[in-house]
Image 1 (cartoon, one colour):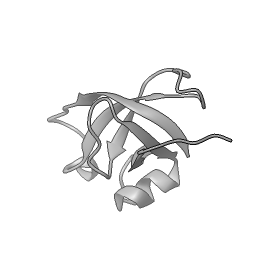
Image 2 (tube, helix red, strand yellow):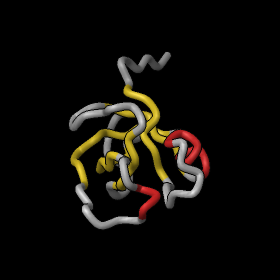
Image 3 (tube, helix red, strand yellow):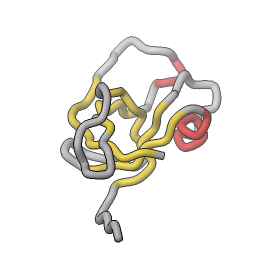
Image 4 (cartoon, helix red, strand yellow):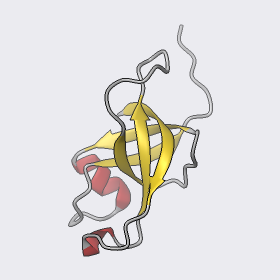
Length: 88
């Protein structure tokens, strides 16, 4: 799992039929200090996240499981909206 920030949405009227009904969001991966890390990526939203929210994302098979679409070409899914981070 990793932290990310939702920075946009993607609308694709033509897409793989297994992606129909999914909400696609652009997420910016973040490091532990909430600084951008790497390039933005498109993720399937499974929790109703909005632009500007800090989210938890998963990669690979975990993304397909979270979206409940095992036959879909999903590599990354948003699985949580972060309320607070505490580092000791």
